[in-house]
Image 1 (tube, rainbow, N blue to C red):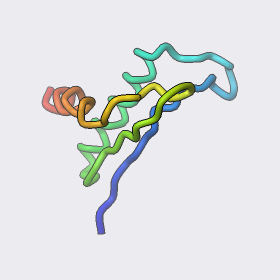
Image 2 (tube, one colour):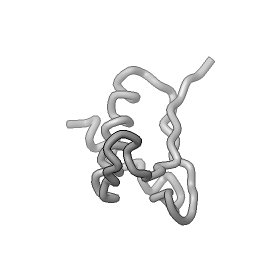
Image 3 (cartoon, rainbow, N blue to C red):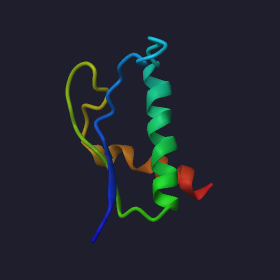
Image 4 (cartoon, helix red, strand yellow):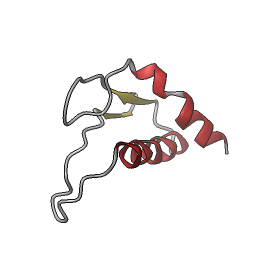
Length: 74
């Protein structure tokens, strides 16, 4: 059996505060999720491709892979 983590990188206001993160802040959150997922031994970290609001990622997911890998190496 294999386990993975997946996100569509939706960016919606916080349910309690109503605050909407900047795209930079939201992408940073995704990296902050990917690094411990890798450290904990998950088999995959997936980013789905969606176009338009409220999703931030409209490019093929492999383009995002270098940043989490660089973070994990630090």
